[in-house]
Image (cartoon, rainbow, N blue to C red; front, side, top):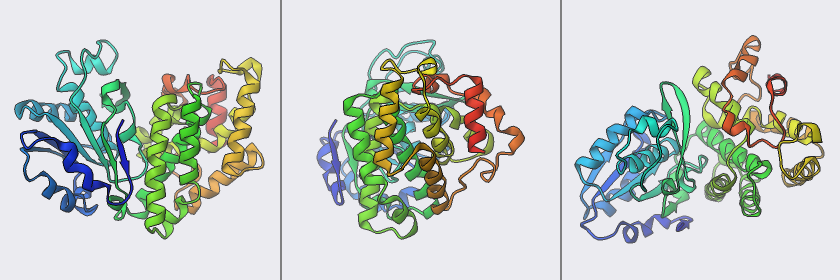
Length: 374
């Protein structure tokens, strides 16, 4: 993967677009494309290329919307997809690029009933938020009949990637908080994931090193230093989960987003604290990691050191304080989920994500985690 990071990196885009004959599908958000400064910076760079535009889709990407983009892509015989925006833009662009090259039924592919038969179109990713990490992953989230699926394929990973923190300057505080927590949660989950490798843990460490010292400043009093740190941290968190995948906190988040409208990054963050305590208490009898319970406990001890916590309980308390310092509710109840509905979230657990958690999540354990987050 070719990635260019830092202020001014958008200047590298013309050399990545190819010859003037390269036909481009430009996928963008709505107002964010203008507000971020991306339109003013990118439009002149596209002047020599035939450009087809696609925007106006949902924050949570729906398959039928992505297929509208596929129709435009095929009609224009597009060569390259250029994604400029946040996580939903990235995911939608990746879906359009993939399905534009498939002969099979997209619904069957998403639901696992048919394979991806060939690589998709190349995707150039230019994020305008610092959080989803989608610019660095082989995954794309898509909703089919209100059910959330994650499609995985090597060709979904954008290449090249341009991470220019200047495009995040217009992010409002709440968006900075939600996306920043998403990146932090990804780095933490990646570190303890069953699928973690030395490379993914190194990427997670790098992400935490950027994110933890700067997230509050990026929300409360953003400057270029905090914006750059958050952009770099989000990219490295994406690199981490690209190897390891996410775990229990992501598994429990989906029902909060679809059922209560809690933004994804906040929904994930609401159970990170309880999961730190839960995973730190692993025993051989409920260990889900091939390395064994002692390995998981050592990993959790290393994580506590990285986040500056004295114990798992201290980490949980600190995590709630961090969410509240960012202006977001730290518990499910204050986020709008009634106490008598908390355990119902267990029925919507994403089993694939739950299977990556280092401590086994049965029904009782899941309810215990949710009640600890209430």
